[in-house]
Image (tube, rainbow, N blue to C red):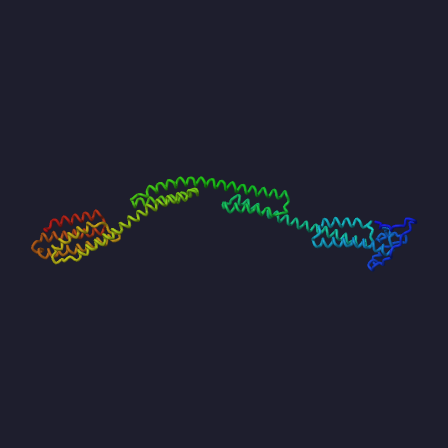
Length: 422
């Protein structure tokens, strides 16, 4: 590139003198790489010899040399900046390589004075560094691509496991939705691989959706059946709630509860209402039973107190005159038998205490009778002995708890007692 020529006078074409400007030290140093001859031709020194690069007519040679040196320095600065940007990571290796190649291609014809061979060597180093950087970046990108591919592969595998066997319907559905969000954040997978992995994920998600749909369809059918069963159980419980057959109905109510638990859950919108009706019917029955049994228990406790009071009267009878004691005993026995049931846990104790009190009166009467007539009437003595044996047999029968045996023993006592004179 030639510098602009100095303007000439219109009347003779003579050159206009220009002001002489000294060359600074670095320009003198650079001048060793070039020169300007007497006719103004500018040369640069290369490894192949001098090469004309232009003509300087605008001033003295020092100024011309400075001009062409600055052009070299601009090129050298550009190379330095390219290198620094590449090393810092701010420069794209491919762009750096292209720019460096363009600068290198300009060097054989560039109009600049300086160490062009050295600059060419620096550009070769820059091209090598840019290629190495590009290769390193490519390796990083490949590593990132492999990591991204592995991440999406792992998500696809997880989705396939969920789609094949998971029965945690809500948690798994939430996880599949989260996988979609994670999938979108993973970048760098090539289009073909990404599409193939997405198809696997989508297929797994569809499989999970089908299984979940089938599960809930089956569940709906089961709940419909449970509803029918429980409606029938509610009707039975409500019918039984008014029963007064406490023992039998209590067992039936317990059986209904067992069936209720085995029936499964009805649809959510009716389950609670059916349970409220069913439980209400059961509560109504058991509340009535509790009230009646509490009243009965209170009555039986009162009967127990009454019988204990009569027994106390029997125990207090004076046996000095057995006939008077026996007469009083018969009246107390009638009152005792007229009283209703006592609590089950007190029944045996009450009966045994009454028999002991009665036996005390009988023993006193027998002793009195034997004392007066045993020696004078052997026949009566024998009859009384048989009566005593019968009474002992009755006592043993009562202890056995056998109703038939007790009845037979009581009849034998009554028969033997009827044979004796009053």
